[in-house]
Length: 185
Image (cartoon, rainbow, N blue to C red; front, side):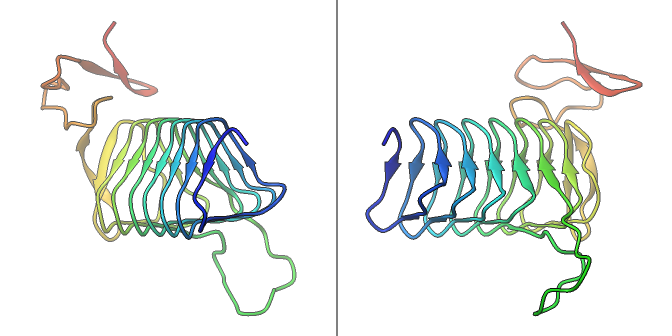
């Protein structure tokens, strides 16, 4: 085994977990879940079959990651986040249920106690504030928060808020293009 598993973690046979990943107490990783290398999966996290987690991802305590959720490399997922994969849930399976994919793109940060509805994409290096309810796509490098989450500015690669000139205190500068925000060379 090339990853660490706490004695009180439950990792089903058939779960794929990358080298150097740490799975802590009371986490449950189901058969068919994919977790990359050098991740930190904290206490009480549930990763359902069909969920895909990239490399160097931190998932804090008590997070539920269901089938259809993709979390790309270098993301931070705060405590108590719920990813939703059923827009019309019922206690019994309904005929014709369609799984809606949810994607958290590279480098995004999600604060604690967020709810992310299915079918949503959180863009690269976006920051979603704690306690938010995300009901629609979040553009790359944007900062959103609230219920429902709304735009409050732009974020740098380092996570800090950009000023009105799209510059960061770390020294990086950005500019707007038709495709969105881009880093100055």
